[in-house]
Image (cartoon, rainbow, N blue to C red; front, side, top):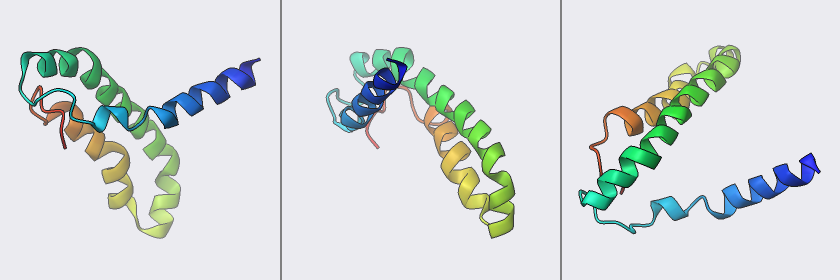
Length: 93
């Protein structure tokens, strides 16, 4: 049962992954600011924390291949920029 639930959750994540990138709300509108503050920012912060944990796991391999900067950019810096530097309500890339 648990395996089936995980498979369904993964399928939903893959299937709905592109829906947030569609411009449903104009940037800077009150609705976009509210959605960004309530839903998007917490997920960006969680992505930053999860990326930092994954970076620590990947760090020995990144050191061996001398790709520490690229690994840090992909797993920590980009999610942190999305969470803390992006203007509130700017949902488009």
